[in-house]
Image (cartoon, rainbow, N blue to C red; front, side, top):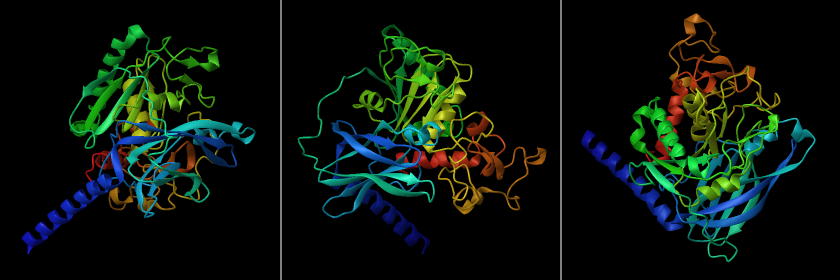
Length: 428
């Protein structure tokens, strides 16, 4: 009987794998369709507008796990087969615009910010729906819905500048591995060797930290050399502006240490011909700082003494959708960035409104909820108040974690990272 069950299980698994691949071959070609669009809005509302549609030569993502069921992110893209109406691709993501909408500036201004998404190139007509999450009920609502004919003359098919791409680590097929692309920012033509050396150093530092240390074979690492006119980046709060490839800078949303760029078009143009599951922008400076947004990009500086852990922290945001667990540092957002009446989507914070969906199953028996933050519980998994920029009403899994103060990842974060690696490598 056990043998029959085992055979049946293997048969079902094989059928699921074949079904996923068949779906890809049925609906998609092995290249990408990229949509650049503007998010337009303010504190009260937002909408989206199409800017361009591009054909690009590489699809580096999964070919079996085409539907994203994580429910992560402030935005989602869903692709439907036009004939059948079936959903054939989906993925969640964050944007910097979403964060800006939570600032005081957004209460008096309306702005438009460029964003970009990519998915496998469709063989047949599709409907693409870009949705934004409403924080009041945590549901997604359509911002932009467009029908796309993959043979349309209005799709941009021009080749872009082919930057030099180096293969830092290659462990196998791009559809079966997580492809991390490092992009150089603020490196001049004479500093490209430094960039490659920095990427190699960052690569080694990532795979020394659990859980990445046991998953190294699941990753490919690429480096894209971009030449900037000047070294460094903007420091607008001090009147410093540099001519760089990606227009990055500190003082994002008015926060001195927050290092980002709004120039999504330049980022996507840089990786147009590279297999890409995750982007890390490496900035040529020794100043402390960085930033990261889920399934968009992460950014950090190359030469600060805390460079290695800042990199892993920010990559935790962009790769696995992890929230910040600190609650005493300066931020630009108001107290409504998280709605305490609903459960946040990030896997490592909770308002306890739906704690069953978080790390409750990982807790030791008889763990008090909330868990007192005292010496007895200092190294235990629990439910500790404070996180997501708020001291009250939001809870985190451990007193210390990479997402709070660069301590080792807690079990909840570790599980989230492993799940994302499995998803992108088609392991579930």
